[in-house]
Length: 97
Ligand SMILES: [Zn+2]
Image 1 (cartoon, rainbow, N blue to C red):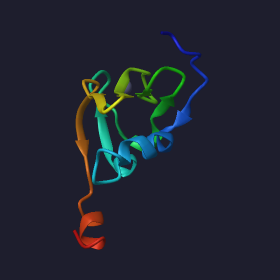
Image 2 (cartoon, rainbow, N blue to C red):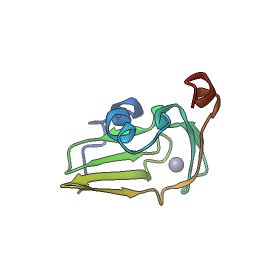
Image 3 (tube, protein in one colour):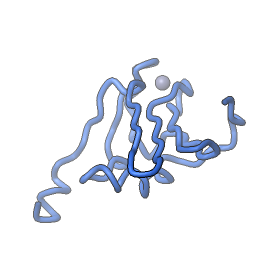
Image 4 (cartoon, rainbow, N blue to C red):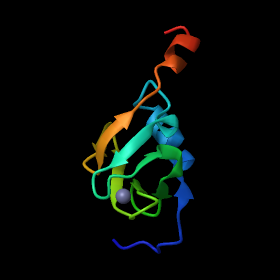
């Protein structure tokens, strides 16, 4: 699949799906692109939702950071495009977890 390069939403569009599997808000996290090394907030990623799931791409180089497909009772999460994901745990303290 080769989506139209301009037909994307920002990373916040993935918040609903990702909140089903992550206890923390991933869109507020920073991630490092495995392809170009850019460290950006996930909310800045370009999210394509035209396929059966969603694909988040690096806003700098367009490399796929995350692929998410939900089918029946399973979620397939491909994070190969992220070297690391940096989560701010202060939000856990604030919510009392
Ligand atoms: Zn990149």
